[in-house]
Image (cartoon, rainbow, N blue to C red; front, side):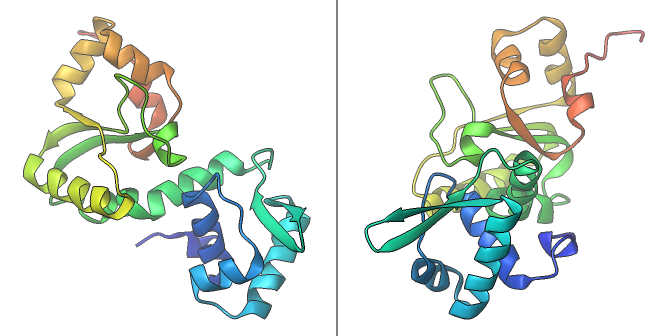
Length: 199
């Protein structure tokens, strides 16, 4: 199974990247990080220095503590965000259960969901396209809802219905296509492309 460990040699860095990206608006001090990821303080300090130097993190002094948070201006911020979304939480569960879920064409998270924010009115956190076994998907969503402590707003379409709504410029689908998202399964290009009859 593919994971962030494929790209990163340090197990501590993987845990820290996952922690920061699954709580994007949080700031942490060193001891909080060691408690959260259950690693030695010296290993955490080493990785914090490396991540500060590379620009992944930024730091801020508050009282007598130095707090660390993500640097959204980091060159590969979006790419890391996408990798973490696929490798943790619901993204990881969906990828691992893909065969049980039926014939999955696309799975997409909204950018707000990735950041841990509730959807705006009429927005979805998750869109799934394909011939989907709904009880299996529902079970995964319910597990994640229990874990994050809020309801997940999601929609499921068959391939035909999704393509039909795209060609008809359905307002809901247009909002999804023009919004920011992370693809968990499927190609971004194919997701937005219109497959017109006879083309």
